[in-house]
Length: 328
Image (tube, rainbow, N blue to C red; front, side, top):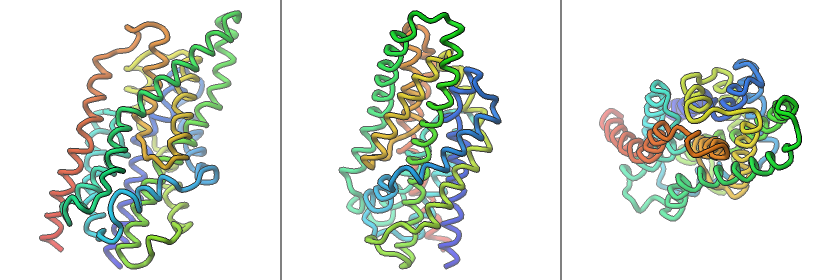
């Protein structure tokens, strides 16, 4: 029971870190276009991150808890090692202002510890490969959706004066950022719900056929919202200003493109990276101006971080698993 409490506490700490690590996803565009102050933006994002569980089902949570690793092979030590590896990498990337994926950090940690425990046969390879595929597909889908929306916006506002269009889209950004935060809360907080549920199964306090308990849903959404309120200013700067300079209509297009992508993948139960999605959407919005509007040097370093996240956290969590096995 003590180990279960420690694992649940670590899972909620990860959710808290995920909130301030990924606060940039929800607020970077709305802060960089000066629609809201930084504090107003994180409060707005935190509210809709919390409300997400009222809007969406638990498709992503079920995928993580039951669909990546065979539930019957999971132990509390596996979950503990996965969380320690994931938290470590999240803090490292936050410190250096790298917008890596908290989702893939968690998945990589979970898979790495499970493989260290019982070998490669314990993972659902098809699901893991689908997640890896969406490392590349999610940002591309977000980018293409953002470009499409930007084109429609430019067409509809072609007869408006710049000041008038800017005023309209600053108001619309409140809606688009709220939509994106809903998608973020429905996707990222649910991953930790799945991890806690897997822990309950490992502790013989739940069966794989059970529904995820409401206290798990509520605590994960609350931790995500509190973490978002804490901000993540190092990564906000990278996302909001270093990739490309955004105007209000481009911020609206990026947020809406990202939200649509997250809504679709969330409904399908595909645990994609919200970081990858909004980065692709921001790039798409920047490309509607010109190719050189996107700072490709910054983008290249971000993509490298995306690619190495799952392997690094897998190896790190496997190492932690072997270490905890010696200690415990």
